[in-house]
Image: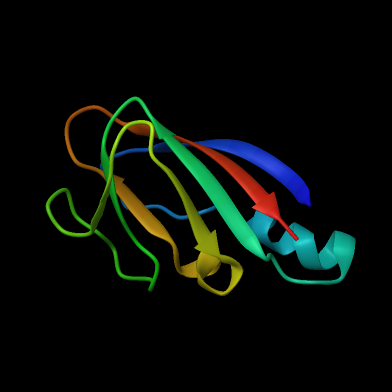
Length: 96
C-alpha cells in the first residue's frame, strides 16, 4: 500500500529520500517501509543503495523514463546525483 508520494529534484549534490517520509511508515502503520518505487524524468541520474555517494560518472545509471524500486531495507541508504547540468526529477511512492 502506498502511504506517501513526493517529487525529488536530483541536483549536483548527492541526496537521498526524505527521512521524514521514510519514518512515517513506522509512526503511522507500525512497520518499516517495504519498498520505494521511483520514476525518473527530465535527465539521467546515477545512484547507489549502500549509502555511498554517487558522482556524475560513478554509480548505476538511471535513464529518463526509467522505473526502479529500492527495497525498504536499503531505502535510508539510497543516494542519487545528476550526470549533467540538467537535474533529474524523481516521482517517488513509499509503500508499506
